[in-house]
Image (cartoon, rainbow over all chains, first blue to last red):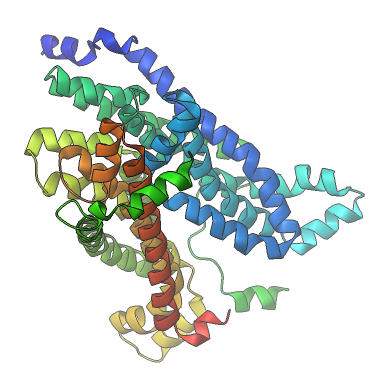
Length: 232
Length: 221
């Protein structure tokens, strides 16, 4: 058993990283694109909220980009950015954009007119209103998008193995085959999955911390719209 | 020499248009993998999503299963399954189904939950049986969202089925993987273009299905 555990964490030296080093590399290759995607998605989403006609074409373009398989995206980019980490990260950033833009637009749009009017009446300018009212209320929707984007990004990094061992934990899959060590495949799959689950749980925690006004348990069934109307 | 140039060279080479490695054959294989995986994933995800959404129970368990499914890396799972089961169709189907079930499951559940409860209560008040409520009241109203879940699952399968080529199966991934090892850029770009086109065709198909199957009363909103 201890032999097996030893083999499990014994990373071949051609990868030039320890197990923890591979995890760090994987985190960097997975999370930087999501961060870049978020930074890009915020202004794009704001434009889509501001100019409604912009939203359908933006949604169309991002959906088409999402349809390009990651492997093809990587290989085509090799021509421009070489067999590097950047080649893996650019497509991941694009994919996260596809998830994040609709999430943010839906979140910001869900802020009620009354809330916006109240903020305006309190003397909030458009910028302050955006950062202190709209964005915080949209946090649950944004985090929901971030969770999907992060988890799929973590899973996709592994494919980078195919373009000159740029797949962090995915590189173990290749070594498992050339050295005939199946335990490395298990290591790759289990570590990647655990990484995704931990990041997902962390994002849930961030949401709970950022939105102290939300009930911890989701409400069971939304009241009928008719009732809401009656209450108004 | 840019991407368009490579794509043009690939598609104008008549050698790429026939035989077992020709575009029609590879396109057919890719479509078959996609369809099989989508049918399997739908058979698993749709009934569970419909029933849990109808009764409004098990949402947390569902989101746990979906997170776990999303967390499993498709590529790693493919290699692992091939190690365990040998070469064949099954080791490719498992990662594709694991990939496709979460979006179907979660979107179906959400779609059923977001149906306006007033008509559902009305149907129940009229004495409709639960199964009739599900299929004749809730499902038609939830259909646009349910279809969008199936659509995103289908797109993900189309683009991920390319990895089947890594374990020596066919499909459009053949061009990408072979091209990569042969340093034949034409092939890679051609393969990538074909997958993107197939994904767009899938989008169009789902748009058409939604157009035909969603009742006009639901669509107008």
